[in-house]
Length: 170
Image 1: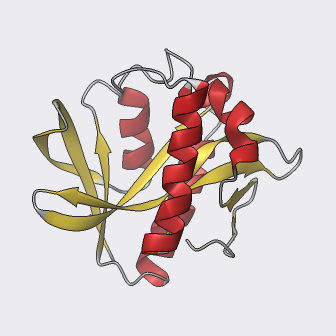
Image 2: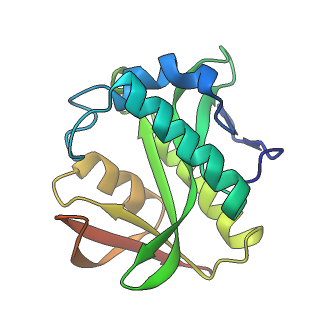
């Protein structure tokens, strides 16, 4: 998803991040509960680095994680997007997502991830998309399953077990 592209769903806009999104993302990436399945929640400096990394992905790969924005309030509530991920020695398109904890259970991640999968299949020409999810992260696993991804296997990746959820283009 390049810098000019905005994906739109029924309730959400997905747009490229800017550093102005740092305060909103602190409520997501800085939350110890929301980041339970990551090595640690991110500090403000870590979030700025995370946003900068995604901005660099837009330039390098033409895609990255994007700000997830509620259409009715223009509020940034998380992120979702496609990233190029090196898994088992091959580059794959991963759909990733995070939603602010007080909004869990509203279907935002499912809605945004579905739009990103469609984008990967129809705009990027991907034949397969994955989501890498820690086994205990039942909420993220449900999102993947609702979108038709199935757990192919569990691998040890970046010091943790991860389920590789995958879906092939229909």
